[in-house]
Image (tube, rainbow, N blue to C red):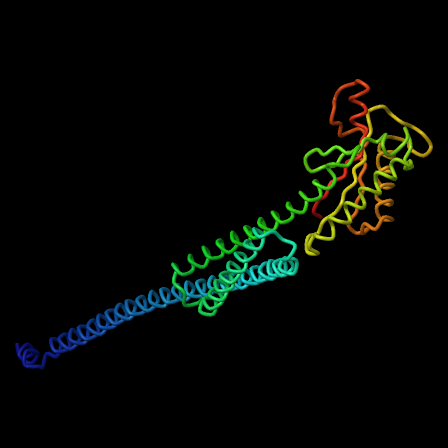
Length: 316
């Protein structure tokens, strides 16, 4: 019993140790909780920043793409202006040539030339306006860009109209040529062609001009000399000589087929006209043999119609 009293009277430190250990554990748990919350918050912040950076990157890429598009459109506009400038210079040159020939034109042609000058001035103003718009192309709105495209289409349409008007002038000169040649004996006018029967110029199976053929072509050369003097130098014309035969085959050392015969006749006429003063650079020869008949019949008259020399005034 004495020992029991002695044991009960000693100090018991175990409860205090348990309390201290519990407090330390609570502190550790609190620190861990704070750490986890801090990591979660930092994760949210970093995720938001990543999204912001990604969004800014997409916007930067879009702006870069838009800038590339604007640059390409600017280059296209420069190319378009260069093309329009070349076309304008071409039409201006044609207009100047027509004005140099103005005393030979009819009153109607002079009025058309005046109208052409006015329209050319309007096109210059439009071109100047487009160049001003091009200098500010990066700041243009979508509607203004559409307006530039429409202006380009209208300019192209106007230039095409001017070319068509110049074609009318050429038709006037072709008409004068038909008026001069239409009354010549032995020549048949069919549309835009002047047709000689081969017998008027060549003997059968030959490509050498006879006396009557030389006389006919001498008259033709005189008429051509009169007409070509009034054709403006900017009209790139060519007198094309086409040789045709009938379907009866020919075979000789000189002419193995109708192709050689028709071509040789056309070349003979070209050389003769060149000797008469027609510029060689405005002459061309072609041979079609029997492959372009104008009469499919088998009669002597049909064969005679197909043996022909066609002369036409074309543009190169």
